[in-house]
Image (cartoon, rainbow, N blue to C red; front, side, top):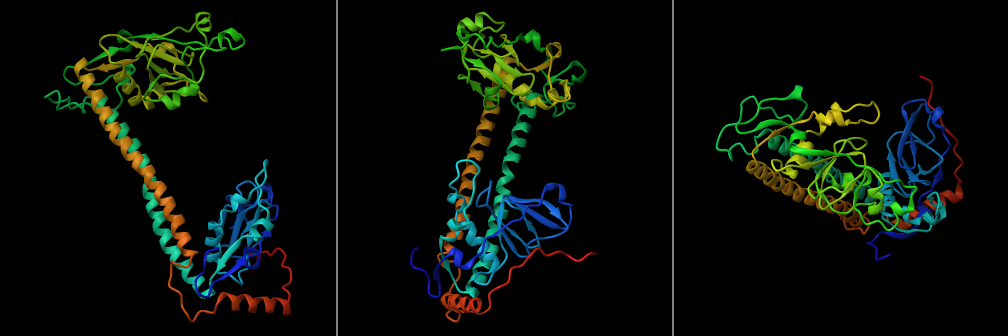
Length: 441
C-alpha cells in the first residue's frame, strides 16, 4: 500500500474484522416478522427472530459475491453470506465503506457458482485509521454519498422523461399539432392527443387538409413466413435478409438492413415468404406486438409481421411513426390473455389520418429533429451516470487514503488500539455467541 497518514496502520483485513457464516433459513419459515433476512444481494424476506445484532454488515459469499449491505436492525444473514457484527477495531459504518472499496467480488475463483473464500478476504491489506478518525470519515462519507445518491436519483429519472417526450412528439405529429403553424391555419379544436392509427369506431376529427383513409387503400398488406428449418439447403450459407422477432426490438423505430438469420433464396421460394421492397414498413403483430421498423433494402420477414408496402400517397416513415404513436391503442385491441395478437382481419380495418404528402415529409423531418435532440440528451445522461459512478469511487478512494477529513494529533494511533485490544483478547478469550431471540410480545 502507499504511504499512510500519521496514526494509521497497515493491517490484514482478518486482523480487524471477523467474517461469520450466515445460517440457513428456508423461505418456508420466513414468517414475515420485523427482522430482515439477508441473502447475498440484499433483503430476501422478514422473520420474527434474528441471528446478528445491529448494526450488522452482510457480505455476499455465494452467488452475488462481494455485495456489501448494512443493517441498522437485528437481522438474519442466510447461508449464502458472511456477516460482521463485532466492531472492536473498526467503527461499523467505516467498516461498511471499507468493505465496499475492496472489490471482494474480484476474489472469486469459481467457474461454476461464484464464491468468496474467507481467507482470501482476510489476506487483503487495508489501512486502519484511529477509531476517532474512523467516526469522522464515516460521517463525512454518509453526507457526501447521500448527496451523490440524490443526484443519481434525479439523473435516473431523466430517461422516463425522455420517453414521455418522444411519445408526446409522436402524439403531436399524428394529430396535426406538430405542423399546425406550418399549415398556416388552425387545427380543429376537437382534436385530442390520441394516436393516429384507429379502428373506425375511434375515428375522430381531422385537421384541415387531412382525411381518414383505410390503411389497406394506402399500402399493400403482406405477411411473411419461415422457411422450413429442417431443410439445410434453405438456410446454409443464406444471404437473404429476413426479419425475425430476434431483430425487431433493436430495430424498433429505425431502418433495418442486417438481420440475425439469413435463409437462402431457395428457402424463400419454397415458402410463403417473399422479398419485399426497400421502404416496406414491418409491424410486429404478435409476441413483440407494436414494434415497428422499415426495410433498408429488399428483405423478407417471418409470419409474425404485418408488412405494409406504401403506395404513392403514403411516406413509409410517416406510417412507422403512426404505428409508434398508436402502439398502446393497438395493444389494447389485440386478442389473447397471455400473448397479444392482432389478426389480419383487424389490421385490414385500420384507418389512418392522412395529411398531404408535403406535410408528411415535414412531420417526419420535425419528428427526427426532436428525436435527435432527445438522443443527444440521452447520451449526456449516460455520460453523467458514468461520471457519478466514478465520483462515488473517487470519494471512497480519497477517504481511505486519509484525504477526506483532517487528522487530529490527539487521536489514539491505530497501532496502540491494535495492541491494547489484542492484549485484552489474550487475557480474556471471548465466548462464542449463539442465536439470540426476541422476547415474546
